[in-house]
Structure formats: C-alpha cells, structure tokens
Image (cartoon, rainbow, N blue to C red; front, side):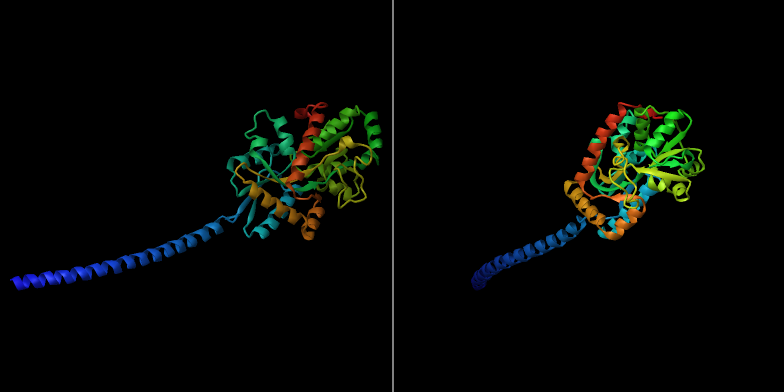
Length: 352
C-alpha cells in the first residue's frame, strides 16, 4: 500500500510537473489565441467599417425632387436637372409635381416630408412673396428652406396683341392712357403680375386683369385680341408671336434671352421698373448638412456648364445661371428688396 502511495505521490509529482508545464504552454497558447482573436476582431471591424463608409456615400437611394410648377417651361428645366443629377449620382432623381397656390403647396409638402434624400425645385417668389400673401404659412422660409444652388432664370417677356398696333413701350403707354379701362391683360403667377400692376400704377394707367385656370388659353386670347397684353414666360407667350398675331416688346429679365439675343431688356429700353429676375433654384431642408449642401451645389454648377444641358435649357426658354449657393442667396435678397418696393405701390393680395 505504501509502495502504491509512493508511486502515487511520485506520479502526482510527475503529474504536477506535467500540469505545470501544460499551464505554461496553456498561457502561451492563450496569449496566441488572444492575438488571433484581436486580429479577427480588427478584421471584422474593418469588414463592417467599409460597408458603413459605402452606405455613408450619398445618395444611398433614389432622390426625390419636388417641383412647385405645373407642366411647362420651369417644370421642364427641373426634369433636365433631375436627369443630369441622376446620371452624376448613379441613383434616380424622381420628379414629383406639387403645383398650386403660388408655390406654397409644393413647398409645404416638401417641408412636411423632407429628409436628406428630398430636394425642392422652385423659384425665388416661393420664398420672397409667399410669406406676404399668406398670414400663417405651414412653414418658415428661413428655418425650413436651405438655398443650395441657382439653376436658371426663366425668360420673361412683355408681349402685346397686334390689335394694339404698338411697337414699343412708350407707344403702349400712350394707347393705354388714351383708353382707360378699355383693354385687358394677364400674366404669369406671382412676380409678373405684381410688377406689371405696379407699372400701371406708376404710370396712372388702367387695364382689366384677367385670371386663367387653363395655361394654354391666354395665348389663344392674346392672338385673337381678347386680351391685349401678356406678361409671362417666353414659352407661355411664344405661340401667338410665332403665328404673327402678337409681338414681343421687351425681355423683362436683367439680361437678354439666349434664344432672343436681339430683343432688348426693359432696363435697356429705359423701364427698369418692369424688370423681374425669374431665378429658379434647388433648396434643401433643415436636415441637410453643410457638407452635403456644398457637394450638391458643386454638382449642379458642373451640370450648368455642360453644353448639351445648356442647349436644352436655353431652347426651353431659360438663361442658365452659375449653379452656386451664393448666387441663389443673393438673388433672393435682391428680390426681397424689390418686392418690398412693390408693396408700397399696390396691394399684392388684390393686384389689378
């Protein structure tokens, strides 16, 4: 029994020695396993990090571009930019039309549903005029709209029916002054209406304003002499001019139209009070980051320089702008001053 006990003690000693050796090996093995685990963890982290970086590359999904215009010149320009941006970003840019109520329906819808994959395409009047027309807007233009990039200026014209037999603005003034209340006029929404109403007021002229629901009807009425003056976009007044039933007296933008280089501006003709900047642009919501806003502006500016894009926009009645944030902000600031001056002359809620 004692022998067995000694052997057992010896065996235990040997076992203890063996176990001690295994522990050292085990410690070493554990250290190795920790190293391997750390490498695996780092590899996993990297594997997760790269997809995260890829997901952070905007846009991650289709971008929605809300447009405040009905089908026509401005809407067509928005679609041209949407197509070009979609090609640049590798994701579709889907146009959603939200016209009506001087642009406030579209802007309100944009503000209520915006995220960093929803953008707004509208004109300056939606920002400068809307707060003056509606007492309690559902949005705050300063808080909820972030100017991103100026895109184009819609070419605006002063056109007259051949029935008036006038070929200049001074002749138009003389005829209207001699016939107070005899003739009728119409205009595009917002600024064209207010600016021409203020022009009539300044010159002591009286005309009857005609409002239309159907955008095609004013052209027919101008051509047939049912209305005598139209102040609106080039595309909305070109048909009777092309058919020889009406004529343009002036471009009322700050610069001449690319497609009508010989037609002078109202300012050049001595009537700066008729001038309107039909500037349009892209806006983001309050959720958009400065970095993303700057990136989109750079992309829009690049698109504005593409010859094929410029040709399409100019043919559609637009002067192409520079695509910068500063240009859009400066245009809005200038327009606000101009609108403020107009409101001293007329009631824009009841402009006649």
